[in-house]
Image 1: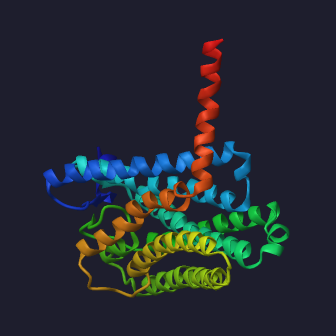
Image 2: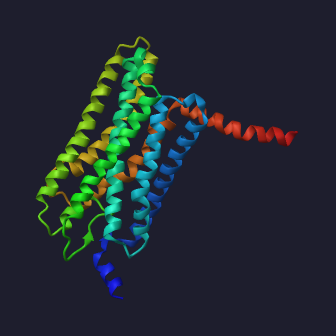
Length: 318
């Protein structure tokens, strides 16, 4: 009995998005649909690229890794959010909270690094086409992806180690819908100045560093596109780059708003709304913008479906 009481005392309570049962039900179905679209879309990309040999290129190798990452990124936040929208008991243990925080930061950092790798891949393909096949070989692609994951894991460890050393007294109600850095810092009764500055510098290096390098890559890409003779080729390239940049700017804009700043007086509701973009909405847009709008992917999906169903029809006729 004593153990149970101690466990309850050490638990955090995730207050969630809103305190309205009717609105919670509506949000549950909205986020459930987005979640299913996100997971299904990314799994389709993974399956099609795996089965289609014509898509076994560096560009689609990075896209499959990105899709794999997006599945786990959304799994870290959304299932717990869906449960909290329907249940009154929103407790989460200290270790569970730190685990969620670790995976959230790790996958978020990996997304930044992979977006940078994908921008570099497009830069080499469009701006340095003669060197592309020799530079972006299999070993290089594997090394870039592996490095993204390793650095992402190290990035995720730092805030968890810092926050886990803080003291949490009296109220343990997290005014958010998951264990995020800002609400945990606000909840702590320790002196969080050094921790805030450390996380601020880390966020600045990761987010601004990756964003600037990504934008520089796209700047060179745009310059190369402008030099193309074919107006159709320019239109197609601009369409692709514009869609990619939209996702990049939405993701980085919301992340920078949340993390690349010292203590802020922004309301908790505003922070929750911003967090919805990079935890729920953006992962749902990525498979559509990055791949499902891609002509080669759509052709491959149709070809894969035809390959699966046409032989069965022929066998039935025989």
